[in-house]
Length: 268
Ligand SMILES: C[S@@+](CC[C@H](N)C(=O)[O-])C[C@H]1O[C@@H](n2cnc3c(N)ncnc32)[C@H](O)[C@@H]1O
Image (cartoon, rainbow, N blue to C red; front, side, top):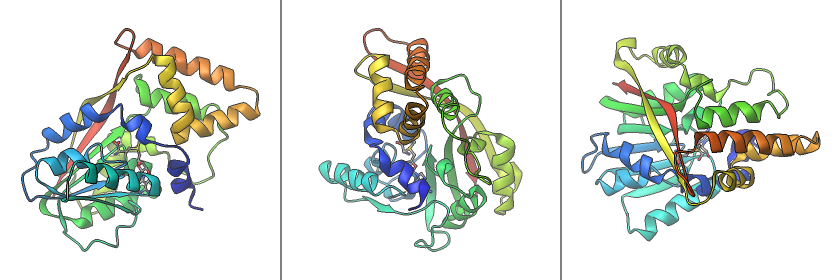
């Protein structure tokens, strides 16, 4: 089994995605999507950005490595009657199902960053985008003090070291790496631009209940808890995460946590 696929099929990311809908929608509203545009959403999950893009009239294909999320995306699109939005299984590092220059816009919000072989990912995203089109990526930033970077940092301190040659997804949050990968794919460096942006997680329970959602449903956290349980450290991990979530929460009673990410735009 492909470990990248197993990681994301393990849990149920729809539970976390449910808390990210407002920010997904707001981001898509700013992308200048027009009716009839051909959009690829890579690592689309259950459609947090794909559905809003289709609602704006784009012709959207969502590609994700996790079969359960592809099914969930197709179900959500059908429920709201979006016939211009379909989801299929695929790997961001090999998009051979699509001819060159197919899409006006390729979006990947916290998606393609999790695929192994980042140079292949950049090459494939560039190949399937038409000249004059755009790629927009959202990538978590290593060592950033906000939520997701800290969850991943804390989780990694409870898990065994990754296999040799593993490239951390967080490297996509470093501008120099992003430039290197797209330049290797044939894009001039001046066509690549960066901005810091915010995604807010809105959850109807307390921050501690939100930690439980990550523990039960978010693949990377599930793995961290499994490893911590083996070493008798699960209580420490729970406590560290609860401290983090409580400290970052901006609401009372419910949970609202903003997280900073790197927005990358590549103009082709
Ligand atoms: C953090 S989730 C983000 C999902 C979605 N973009 C969102 O914002 O809700 C990461 C997604 O990337 C997908 N993914 C991970 N590796 C992938 C790969 N190699 N190819 C395609 N999708 C991948 C996962 O299955 C998961 O749906």
